Image 1 (spheres, one colour):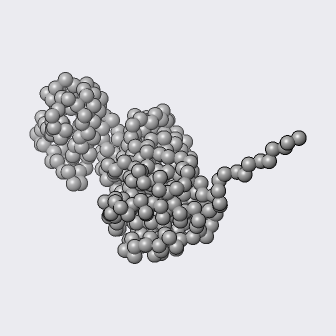
Image 2 (tube, one colour):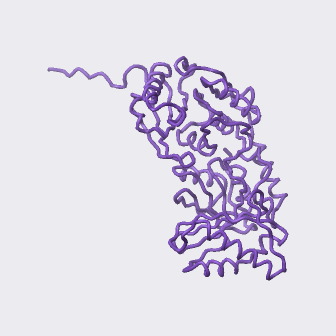
Image 3 (tube, rainbow, N blue to C red):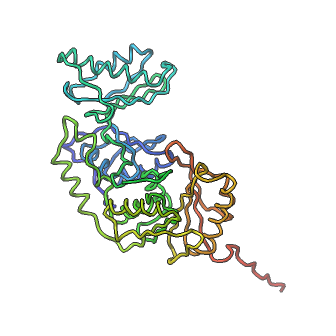
Length: 398
């Protein structure tokens, strides 16, 4: 990955927040540092940092483990819904939008002041609309499907943060996924798994239960330096009043110029013909046909064609197979990894953590992660030939 310098001194520095999935905070923090952010501080499911407009654009276009990037515009404390309205109404909303623009308010609320978590969003919506009615005599319209401005409202107890969402559509929606299987892996999570595994971008990769192909596609994008925002049509900031199209164009060209084809071996397979068809379509949409191989295969018959590589598995969840079959599935996975993939590393992401013991291999690393609302465990294994145990040394009797 390219490493960028800090923002140009002539570009004003802003306090910003990049949201991510639980367990990926430190991974994202490292990415933000490489992309030119400053004052980086990981918090729960997010990373706080500072940067200029150039950094804001670059992170939206290049960060693989960010869900969205927020720009706080106001922080304050409240004691009632009336105070929320009053303080939200005092924000200079005309700095960010015009009365003929549309907007939406997305509330994230954990406060005893409100019995319904959606109600504070309605309060702030009214405050914004009344701001323009008083100033211009026109109330802007709310559009929840495709607004010009997305306002993020975060309330924790009595603390309120009002931010603008610079990403718009969530950043995990890369734009290459034409179809998906019954339990798709979030693209941000897939990229995070690859980074947590320690994969260097050049060692071989195999996903033998590929589903929609998210892991091999994200691996190829990392290996080839393809920015995750390359397939998107727009970002939230492109509708902001101060959008600098020339600056974004320069950042985009800079990132795109670093794309390069690598000889890395990335392959995918699945026992389901439909899954393989979906994966192939997504690979083609990502412009990776011929660079990521995919085919129908039963994992029990898969054997490694490489060593010092990485095998990533996202086995079917219990919602898709009978509980009595899960133990057998994990036992089969463990046996296949041990006998058919010696000399490699394996990483398994699953919500069925109680069945990991059926793998029969000793894990070397574990991480707690979330795929959407589903709590998962990411477990890493070193696959050795024969036994890991060293033979006992013969002690001299002399």
